[in-house]
Amino acid sequence: MAYDQNQGGFERKKFQGNWKCSKCGGEITELPFEPDPARSDKLMCRNCYREGRDNRTNK
Ligand SMILES: [Zn+2]
Image (cartoon, rainbow, N blue to C red; front, side, top):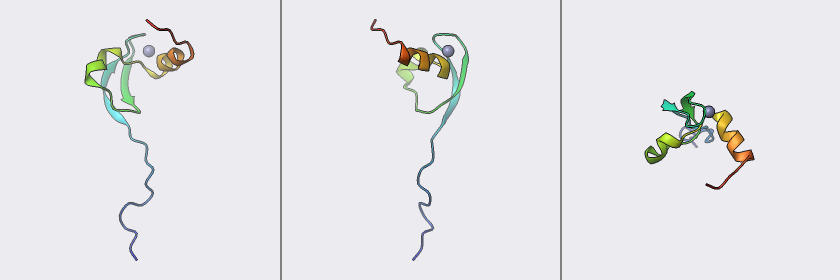
C-alpha cells in the first residue's frame, strides 16, 4: 500500500499577480481565486471586497 501520491489534499491555492483595486486603488498581489481577465479592472482588495459584501448595492 502506497500513499505517496495525493497526500493531504487540501491546500489553498493562491494566485499571485499584479492587480489594482478598483475601489481604493491599492495594489493587489495575491488573490484566493483566479481572477477573470475580463474583470481584472473590477478587482477589489481584501478590505474593499469585504466591505462590498456587507454593503451590497445593485448598480
Ligand atoms: Zn481596495
